[in-house]
Image (cartoon, rainbow, N blue to C red; front, side):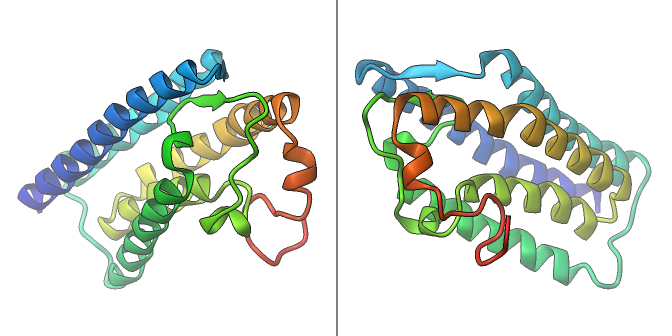
Length: 188
């Protein structure tokens, strides 16, 4: 299992590295468009949650030799579906996608792709992946701890900051009034 987790961590690390490279390019684009960055003060918390995710997986799976549960295909399938949703989010947002919060004044909020149905589908992806991959590998402590920390950072800092910045510089409230935060077709 330790060889398998090595490959999983390598692929995830490569994915995250590529995302950071794209985010830097998109940050430069947003800055050139007159974009305003919000949420710098909590960005390190998000980075910390993701680092804890990697460390937790490695420690539990390799250090404590956890074993996948018999029902591992279910969380793995959910993890893979989340990756498909991630790609849909990236394509829909185009240059607006970022790991940081950039708002370009007077640019309309994105309402295509999964953003037709939800305000924050990319955060749904992160919530799903941080829970399901550790579950598929039998890393229960990582699944629970990282998921709870991630939800706390999202609900306490990230989403309120992002929505406030969008509301200040765009017509976000009017545009997204009928969109739910987390699940489509569910009351707020």
